[in-house]
Image (tube, rainbow over all chains, first blue to last red; front, side, top):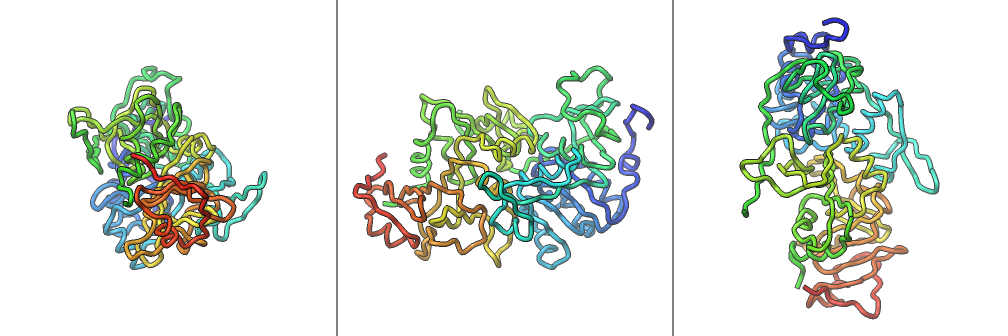
Length: 234
Length: 218
């Protein structure tokens, strides 16, 4: 790995430097657009006491859910965590700290974190348990709470295509939190379905410019579907 | 008789206007998409990052990378756009969505809404609901008027932790369509065959009853 060749060949190399107690930002919404192989590598590495920032926590046995199996997660910062029985047990037993964060606030925390903005005001959560203990300020007669941004020691991201410069595009709604997480990791690792030749991606269509990306790896993906719904008529 | 889930959706759909961008929550609100009048065009926003949600796919076109906020596989309508979660909530928080429809456990006369957390029961999270109620000006809450035990869900003060404060102006229940204004529910329409007395009986919060409260027609 050197200069503008960010491609690595193994998942060990992709996640090299991950240690106990680190914070990982993960892209994905439900099981859509999750960095499934990078998550599996985190499991394999055996690191503990992780703080994970991700909209959801996978399901039992897939996605971030696998990190619960060996109790690798200390704290989860998410907007919705209801799909997962092991999660429930660990949370109720007090083994897992959970910070529920409104989805838009979570996205903005990552965006702001990557953009060098330490905190922002939002009306979301004012007057609710989310606003408790947070600074309140009025603008034009409306109350807003101060929310701090987040950054991670690692960001793990699932893209569709990338080149060796680390330019990434996402496919359909598998984009979700991925480009936001990508901006906010000290080390940002992107796994993709395809690595293309330099120049093949249209510069105007890049979702994540390579400046944010440290490592690129090509993976094979299961892409499990959480709610398989099809048209019944016609 | 109390409105069915479908009838609630049909009544909400009458609030749609040509050119509206609409976010529909999970449950009854989702059904509204089935009753968009033929002579208007609306675009459905799904907060995971899709503006212009189409119907469910066929078995042949199903795609794991194409889901809605309920995590169901969907398609993109013609004219759709796809973007990040931050962009999606910029639209929502920035007040660009014309109508938001979502469910609730409780609503009160101050326009407060509780929809995400029952203390003592498992808390799964608020998802995008807090951003949606904080960002939208035009929100319709759909819910049942009272619990199975007959306890009113339209209150003087919400008893459950809030999703948003002072943000709800319209509520459609299985019994009535109401505005919320000036610290009271204002009864606008009632379900066919439902008496005003029954609505009074099942509304704990202050209720104002205008002279004429028409029945909703189907």
